[in-house]
Image 1 (cartoon, rainbow, N blue to C red):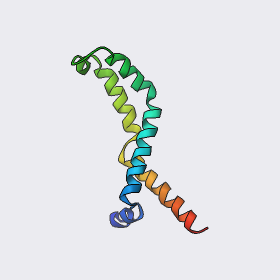
Image 2 (tube, helix red, strand yellow):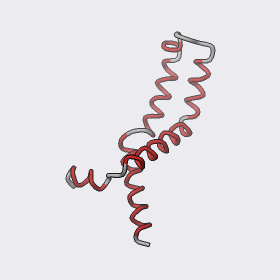
Image 3 (tube, rainbow, N blue to C red):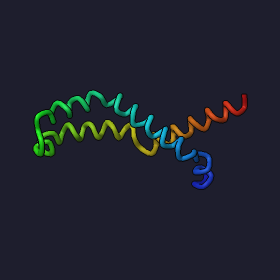
Image 4 (tube, rainbow, N blue to C red):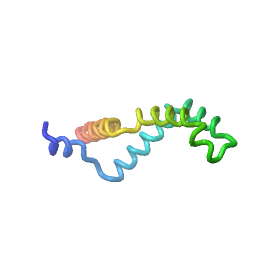
Length: 91
């Protein structure tokens, strides 16, 4: 499948894409709650020292978040949305 054809198939309106991104981020925060809590615990009571004292926790949190918030995940959500819209239209 060519790039242009694939882009057309996965094209959604800007508002829909923004809603899907928001949903993706919300899911990521839920899935990575453990790492967010570890980072928050480390950061508690610190100011500038967070940068080097909590580096490990920040890396873990970012790694987890990236699993759920990347272009591949967004494209998959767009495909699911388009399929859902097609099935609603055929009813």
